[in-house]
Length: 216
Image 1 (spheres, helix red, strand yellow):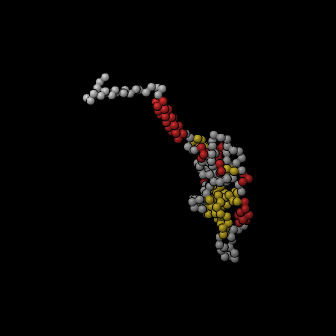
Image 2: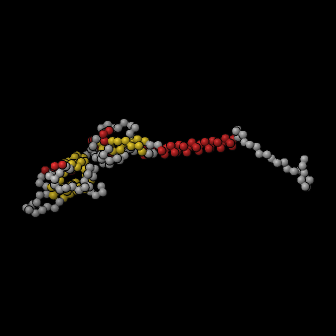
Image 3: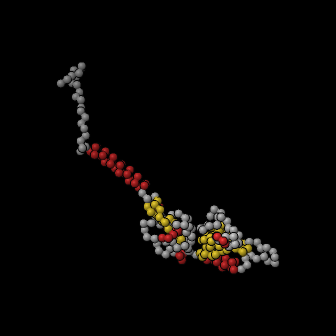
């Protein structure tokens, strides 16, 4: 046995052994690496996954039937929770439903924007316009109705509000040879409760004005 300068036995050097395949520490490390790779792959694939959802093919207005002709399909990335709020394209379209509110062209169709026809209490009323309408007047826009009664004994009457925050269902502008002489007709969705006043104003000598609501 070797001795050092003090006559003491020299320590024997310990050799490091390579860990074998059955070493618990090695197996644990391999499992952690494999789990991390699998988790990362799942996260990346989940982030890139898309689902088909219905979008409006043109503006949908209250009371308008909603079916395949009014819908298109878009592939979007949505969480499972968010997806439940929209009309999925990989499921059948509910029958007999109409739009309950305005859905813009290309907008994802929320489930809450669809309703039974009996739940929509508006009716379309055609209102001819004498003057050229504002460029803001379009399908799906919001307007107020005002009425100006016929002059009493030659004295002009101040306009009065008739109905507020109504949705425009359609704007029919004259074109071609009739563009200069024809009148624009606006289909406005009037609440059932306001129908007597609006129809009465249109039937008399009063003038009904369609006033766009800016930014609506």
